[in-house]
Image: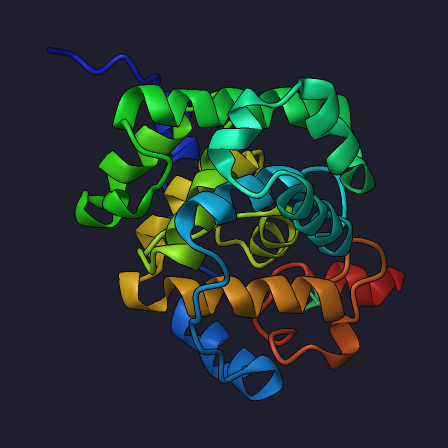
Length: 239
Ligand code: SF4
């Protein structure tokens, strides 16, 4: 059966033929700056999923406050399903967009209960990466980044979350083609980064994006990747 993916889309989902900077080189150069990085689960998988929904369009700090307050006021996920949506929204108001997020959280929890019969997600660890991703992205409002965060951070699976920092840094380094969306970049990055390196690579790139390769005025003069980075000359000339 012929594939329905167009040639243009297939191109976006594939890495550039030759990477200007290899993944190994990036790891070698960034590890002394930001590493070593050890994987430790933050939350169980369901808590991580709800926490990640709360991080949407706000800082981790605000999301943590909202998450803690929600757990304090309505201690079990089964109770969150039964609670008034307004009550959930009040509990999470420090995380912003409380009206939308409260509806989404209840919808996610209901869907998990309906499909799995239990309010837990640790069973996803036993699935193949793509199966677990499909299970999560079928939940209401759960996209590739949220799914990858749950798999990488709480289940220890080799997913590579691509947030705004990683999308920007990988674009500047030429790891993804111009015009590749952050959602599509998940697929590209998993093609170029070995499974065992993905968590580490995610952490190195996100830290690099926050500290040196910032959205405005990246500090290319201080960057150990500048020699090979295809964007450095332009930023150094204008900076
Ligand atoms: S050289 Fe500049 S643009 Fe390239 S990765 Fe480093 S900070 Fe970012």
